[in-house]
Image (cartoon, rainbow, N blue to C red; front, side):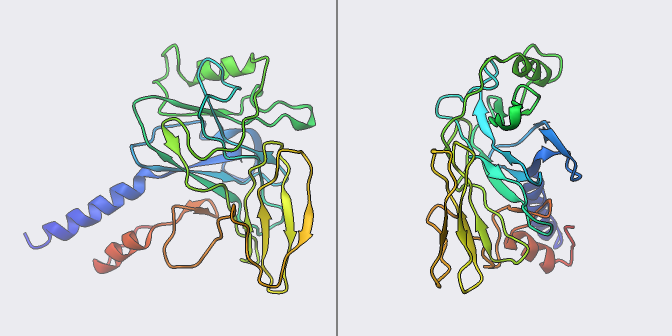
Length: 265
């Protein structure tokens, strides 16, 4: 009986960890670029976190909430990560975006609104779903993809953290290979504003305006990030951010595992 409580605590911690999932934006999850989300459809539980990983090098994508009826147009009051670049250099950690599921009673549909380069990402299959109806239903993922492929309009919403059935607490962030770069891309035009590294060796990619232009400016020696940026700190706890394609465990879960000599990897 004396072992029942520790096992129960560890089981609960492991179950909570398993709820969180990763969706790759613009790749197949193995580093190969595609116009799509991988996986395209997932089932998420109430309160769980879906981490979108922008790991397509040289690409610019977003995650915008839509509806089943209009896959390539923003739903009213929906979330939008903002256009976010993939890794700029080898060794850079891709930007990530944590979306918390707040209502599992309805499906959550989303798409990429990028239309640059003569290619419309949404109509070419870059759509996805959370808690979609089972295959075979008239409103399952396959029907959603079909509707997207025949869409005649693609809407570009403004960046938004709060959505319908899901919300985020911050815009996408990433850490460069030097470990000192904070990046946030939220412009509805897909442009980003870059701040040059300070004498302290840190730099910031801050939110871009909707003008479609890119601006560069030198930062002060303090190396502080903009208020729109979420810096990647080393406080000892994490917020389910994906680093290298793996969702980091919180300090609490590791503490539970360490207490009973159990590895969670």
